[in-house]
Image (cartoon, rainbow, N blue to C red; front, side, top):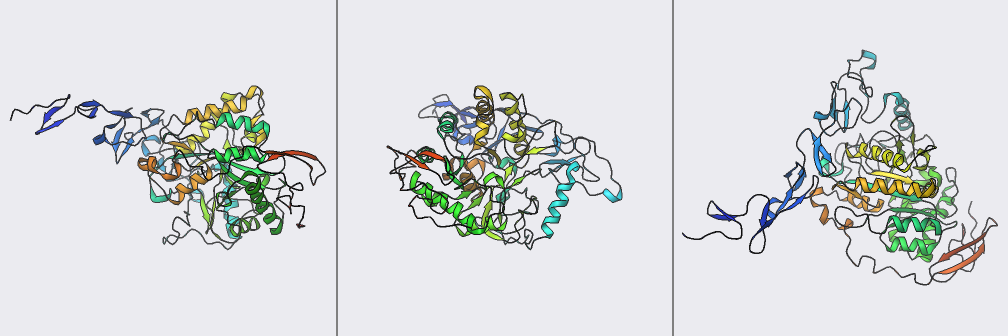
Length: 517
């Protein structure tokens, strides 16, 4: 008809189309936006996959037998029995990929050994993610479950999100998604009070230079205790979008404490944060027991009745396990003293990921406990990366790291912080990894969202005016008291100093102390 295509387009089936790798701009074809594996994509909008990946259901996926490696698809490494996997193509020596682990489907799975047919008395294969050398943990778990009256996770669909979640294995992904369809969450959790020393580190670590794939700064959760805490610095963390959660007023281990003591500790700390840091009550939704000493039903009943949404005290080996609610039996093991004996409907547990080192069967709850004499920053970063990969290459359960304040200064020349920065930089090279707070992770758990739609997930977005409701802490007050332990204390608060030193039974410093048993 004499109508010619322009702007770099070509006539194809009576339509002017842009060549592959280009999209329609204003009046011409312009180069398409190339995104790495794991990213959101839409070829019709010119958002094209790169690095050997292809756009499938708006997500850049690697072909079978490949995995995401930094910014491109790389051949999947041959994985021996007992190792992490994403598909059968990775597993060798007769094993198959089952729930994120290369498992011998007949016989016994022994880490690093080829599959062999087991004898009749040991024909049951090992559970995914658990070392056969530590079968005692599995036995303890079964024993613990027999001691309580909590029912196992039902299979009739009666446990429904957002208020209930569980699975028999503990490894099923909420929403029924495949691992490649969901983001890998990394949750950095910090324990202890916020002090002049630690706030300098936090302001450097969370200055905005580390950002998630959606462009928003990474976030963390801070489990705060009262003794030595500077409330103006806690307020700075909160006003910058980090989560403030409760550890306790005193910082004492509460494994054998009464329900009354538990209530005074956690509610007192919440009241102190509300008054002295201006943290809204409804934003303080998480708690962690001091020194990670679980108190069982006293702890969980107190949190539930006090309006907390989640606990993050328990830890697991093996797995990786997804968080679940206390409606039904836990999928991971816990100590006999700390196991819940009754149901606590709607209360979530976000378990800590125990840290292992490649040459040892031992595991550690906190990052500080995993250190060795002579460790360099690169050693720690590599150790964290290895543990991260156990989640990332498996079912992508949240990788929860417990970091105590003493870890931050455990190496010379800021080496411990440098190790964290190296790890953060490395994992954020993956376009499907998000470093979020525990409460942000919980919002995803309650509303599981595909990776392809995660850029529109409101809870992880960073609008410019998110913290307008937060009262400013422009002129903090420096307060000097003698604590209830007889120690001189100087600390800072937003607003005016209290009349008396805040303590258990008088968390806001009114001078009227209620005795707590």
